[in-house]
Length: 309
Length: 303
Image (cartoon, rainbow over all chains, first blue to last red; front, side, top):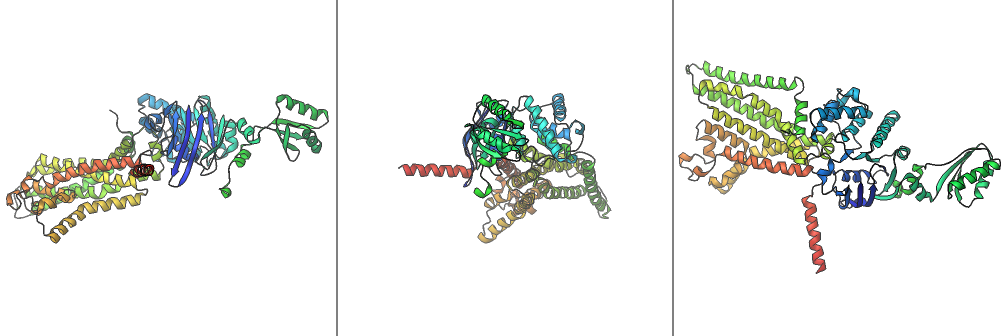
């Protein structure tokens, strides 16, 4: 679907994006993670034809986006990290304006507007002025706007920034719906656990370079070289640690209050063997599970903080 | 027919409610008061008891000057924030990432910003026709004047849009737009006079071209020509073909016509430059020069 090869963007002497490579297959939700100023928004803007790349190639379904910018814009929907709404328009007029840009006319325009407002749960606000909407509603309206021409690729830059927990939850539900509709989505966010839950794959960018990318599991394996398991016991924590240390494929134990987090080199068979051993030796195990991965830990591990830059 | 979506949206917003209609009504009322006042005072003149074409010429001139001043003062204020305002509202990127061409965005904003003034001009047409009652002015001449108005309004609009596209802040754009207009209206006259006084060069064919860019000269010469005055501004420009001052004057085009041609060319250039400025994936001339420079350097290095 989307392929980025050796993308570079330079502002004078500052290299914002450097030799970036990325593949997003159709139907995927790709989470774009990185510290502030890492190059996420720059990359997204280049994909959407809002910035000129210094060098490199971006193709969508094999067609060069940079050379066929106008044609490809019909296939891409972009939601920036700011509202960008016309306050003096009504909600339905706002969507109809963008629909008219894509030459959608008459009844079809009305139908699409109504459908999108239902999708983002703003059906009851269609006659309200954009000015009167809450921040969360404006952000949902912006999402609806980016969908008005039924794009195949959605580029969402921090769609949940500044939202309260309820609005974030609602936004997440909408994105899940879009995922169900088969849209390919690139999404950047600072709320990493949400990305981990929502995305099929993740890329971490730092100082303009893609540091690591792949599925959540692949990233955890790349970073820790192993799976991560988490064990919780009622007591006898020290005994449990000694038992785990007997296994050569278990290492990097992180001991907490009644919990142990460990790197696990074996497969499912080894996991069940270790669990049986713990129980047979009288360890009161409360839970024993492979972790989905703590993206925040990975993020901190693979990116450099401001102090280190 | 596909109407520019930007223009349609802007018109919808501007024409909503009673505000737009109220402005038109108020404007026409002011124009009517001006026209009636002039006609009334002329009729009150004890030495002029008959219907005199001079009445219509007086009213026509007053209305024409009033309307021209409106264009000169209002259009810059309305257009100088057209693109920078979109930037400030953070809506420009959202339109640029659609399939809409930059030139469509620019023309949409231009005609939306000037539409209100153009509407006022067109709405005042029936009022101008009042002067036909007294003779002295023909429909053709009123049409000429309105054509001149429209071209001037669009050109000033293009200047406003140009600065709005190139400068980030609306305030700076407004200052530059009024500054450019002041230069065209007064600066060009100053340069012309300066040229004559310093170099004692009374060859008007060399002097004229710069005044073709002057809207005041164009407007003045149009009225002068309509009233059949070959003195005044036309004499100043050396265009009194009959006076024998300048043998080349007969071949020169009228300042108002020259001004219209200048305006059309300037508008087209400014629109193209504005569209290029807002195009996010444009190749800047500077990057092209740098690229050529690097290429030359590489070539010389390899030699």
